[in-house]
Amino acid sequence: MLRIDNLKLPVGAKEDKLRAACAHALRVNEEALVSVHLLRRSIDAREGVKLVCSAAVEVKNESGVLRRCKNKNVQPYAPKKYAPPAPVSAPEVSPVVIGAGPAGLFCALLLARCGARPILLERGRAVEQRKRDVEHFWRTGELDLTSNVQFGEGGAGAFSDGKYNITNDFGGTLHEYIGKKQALDLMHYVDEINMAYGGEGTKLYSTAGTKFKKLCIQNKLNLLDASVRHLGTDVNLVVLSNLYDLLKDKVDFYFDSPVTTIAREGEGYRVTVGETDYTCDKCIVSVGRVGSKWMEGVCQELKIPTKSNRVDIGVRVEIPAVVFSHLTDELYESKIVYRTEKFEDNVRTFCMTPNGIVVNENTNGIVTVNGHSYEDKSLQTENTNFALLVAKHFSEPFKDSNGYGESIARLSNMLGGGVIVQRFGDLVRGRRSTVKRIEEGLVTPTLAATPGDLSLVLPKRILDGIIEMIYALDKIAPGTANDDTLLYGVEVKFYNMEVALDEHLETPYKGLYVIGDGSGITHSLSHASASGVYVAREILETV
Image (cartoon, rainbow, N blue to C red):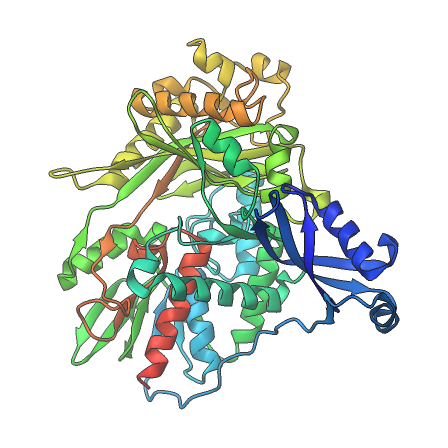
């Protein structure tokens, strides 16, 4: 492989321009390029604004090309490979990790690779069985309460399109506990592991130097900065399977094992599953968003301080993929925030899935909506979907933000028997959608939902904000506000209350850690995974 530096491209240049520049630098035809991977991109504004890029290139007859091109910017290149940490002495008592979502898995991975054989307790099932159970639910609507999208190996993130956003600008407040640089370093470390165990070849997108930043600002929208690795649900499941194969002989996995209690026992802890107790000195809790009520009970029992958090409420928008293709081709996922003129509320895009599908979720018996897509082009659709969410923060005396979100979702289920779908044109005209109107529209739904009226479900303030943002997005992606745009409701993102943690992500009780979305401080795959790596390192330093 060869590395080419100082490639100068116009701002907003597509991948084909990068390939052409690489071929020119190597003095070969583009057909000789086997692969091109963007390594670095920056802005040079000294003499007109342009991109300056570095790329890793696989080329036919590499040695001959290197010899002939005589370009000082071309050098042999060996990509950095993931190297596991050096083994350490295993502790006398195995650490117990509760929950096999991304935080718990990455924590167990680091502990296992360093010789500290952890016990991993998961209420759901292994990923291969989960895949069959979830696909059965999506196909038939028959929910298995013991195995679904919300929990099991890989957590809720296993079926959420496999997007790892590498940024401190959103996804949680992990950086406030461990520092911005360390948080980013750990997210990159997680990315290396994902690439080493099945994600190699997937694309890392970035907002750096994009022309869409200016376009958004000109239209009162804020495009947040991030790099995003898109694995897709299909590749994400491959990575999870590979990690399980790696760990099955180094971690004691117990699936279908819901933890009922965590109790202090001397200087350690007793973790109870049914009639079985597990004792440990180090207990790492990683129960995700679905474990919010359970986590609340643990904190109450152990008198661990918490503070109220938020709930995000909104809809999932489905449009023809071509409407957003100019953004998704370059950025894949664009995190865009709009501040409404009427109420000055923030409305944001979330979980953009180009060429994806809309799917059902079931949380505590409530059917909500989500979206995901595949890396495999044969599984992709002609639609793109994304959520529009309004965050609601509650003050005293109200403390049940998740209960508020659940009540809205239950109302949707009551009126629609599950998820409601409505054309945007019907919503703004104040009428419910019908099967006929949706069938005659230009957007073919990817989820079988009940045509209805979202204005009977969502609070007016939230709905007004969503409508405002759709019109704002229409200015940067004309067609977003078309009459046939589909809105599915409701989408609700539940957050754990924030658990009182120190800079080690440790509770006031020594040896009791809380990581991932169950802590209330992470809200994304990358942040959750990074928190797991961080705590594993903290534990290993004390061994």
